[in-house]
Length: 246
Image (tube, rainbow, N blue to C red; front, top):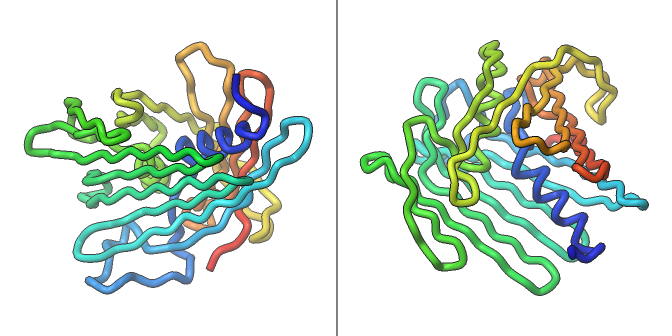
């Protein structure tokens, strides 16, 4: 049985791992030392507010930041909720609109307990080394496989290109999982950035679970994620909204 105090952390973790999308060409951040990045991506920093409805409203926060240095990209994410923190980082390269993961790390600290996971991608051998709690083992992968953080950026790039088949193979939890999304339509949203025309996207689930996830991307902000709404199998609601850009 999960303690009531732990539920907000679990909801924020699932939300951030599953859906937070990356980037905006309109952000004011600039490239790190090491050269100008390709035009498909630009460094950025975005702040989000997360709210979880569990009879009372619990609020958390998340910061996402993208850097470019020495021909490599680095995406980091820091999330906080109550007495818990989650830190993630994905290092990858970009080749003609396709992300190629190199390393992924995950660190969680909650209620005095810690958990960490490290993934290292070897594309010559087509294998990924999973090191969870200092117990490494290998898994076979195919070209195009992504990690649990950078697949979200690949989704954003594909939406920018007008693609409607949004299917991804992701190294997740010691398995290769299939993530699938569908464009629902257009919608005007009232956000902290003003009224924005958005594209609404839904995650398609084939596992029989009743969880629902909807995401809104701002077309005028280079498909920046500005809102997410998730309902779990028990009807608990989780919302993520853009708070500020700097």
